[in-house]
Picture (cartoon, helix red, strand yellow):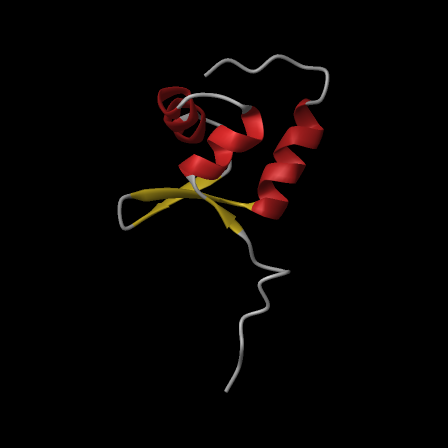
Length: 67
């Protein structure tokens, strides 16, 4: 049986984004729904892959982002 390597595949939820950015639930949903944010929807829940989030942050370091 193949096991999933959780070190390589990590999905953040809205709740995780709230904690990471220290924002409220409404702002977390707005951010994750914003054009250009690397989230995706599965079964009506929003997720973002850890690597995609890190890349998104690196590209925006020192820049403003409106959502």
